[in-house]
Image (cartoon, rainbow, N blue to C red; front, side):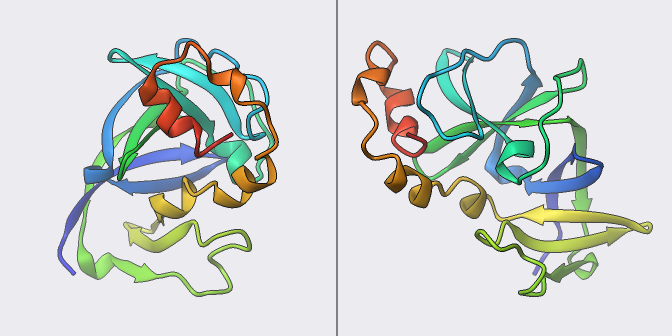
Length: 170
């Protein structure tokens, strides 16, 4: 395992990291347009760089209480395969190279009940950083299956880049 660059962000008082290769860009949260009949953690859609993108509130996704957005709230635009999503986080503005020897795998009993969101942990200067498994975080197949009876009409008029991603969340 070699050293990698990570985007670090804050969520519910903890520091998380995503591989910088998984992050397209970070921007301020200006406006989220609500979309009816979506999963509880989908806050709606955002318009970013010419695309309409589903916005997932990571606090809600991880089971933390929602909090009002502040000027520090950020959108982390991520891509995994054909999926592009905006992750709403409390704050994000740090890029950091994490040495391979600072990264340890997560014990199975710590990874989480609902899908192994954590890939590893890193300790840098006594600071604990939880490294996310992006594919697990954005895998909504069990939720989508339970909502398969929702009307497809909710997606009319929204561009095809959203329709592809929307099938993951509706």
